[in-house]
Length: 406
Image (cartoon, rainbow, N blue to C red; front, side, top):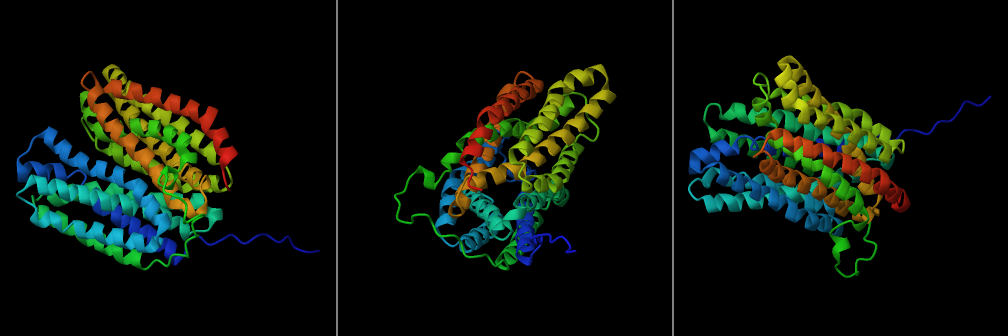
């Protein structure tokens, strides 16, 4: 009798994959060190109010959004590793500007815009480079672990940044960000990227589909609507909690949410690799919907019973984290599977643009709706998730199966 011959599972944890993951964590960590701390720095250094702080910080987001399509095109046209290293070097060196721009707000805004350009290019290229160095049969799992790096940075970066500035020393904060980014650059330089697939037709005229994955527009719309309540959650949930009477340990909401993101990513990627791409996204949307519904009901439940309010508060965080963590690697894989290998970066740029635009709109819409009540933000958020879920089932899923390349 002959023993059954089983195919050998391709190795995921190669040196190149590990180096890209570490470089991604260090990039995100250096970024998240500044997210909760820059408002304090701007108020102390330039003496500006809340509205102007919001304008200054939004310049970074606008810069990231505007550069993503161009970053995808560049990473698909030129050697990807070279684009990645140049972007990483400029991103790291941008932190030097925070040491000497202390008197002119206009120069600080310019610095934030330039920093946003480098981050948008770097994150788009890095998200594509990691796909280049992993086996295609384990792409969902690989993207899941890769995403965990960003979630860990999101969990520990803000906490570390706030701890550093507790002594009032912003220069230590900027030095830490600079050192972290430079260390990430070293790990990025150690990556040996495979030869990039040639463009389908390098002499084809410049058109919108060279910068944006047209086949991914339906999925991009669905993702955009999901990102809006996520953006409202990250921006206004802490204030909403206080308004609802959740005054003790309210900051743990984001720790619980990060734990849900990490836990789900470790399992959902493997499911994606078995071919359940759209099924995994539907599952994630369904779970996240209940989390956002919990947010919408928080003030009502807390008014009835504060203990029940706390339970709902942290349960919502876990559901939102687990739901979005489930759909992230699946959505990323969906966009990649709609594009030829020569347009991976364009696919990633489209995926990230849909998400970033939704986050930005969530911040703006949440600020507008919160003039009435914070609960209204999440009531609208539930409606958007329901519409996105319906759109995904009725249109995105059949469109994906009709146009997917792998």
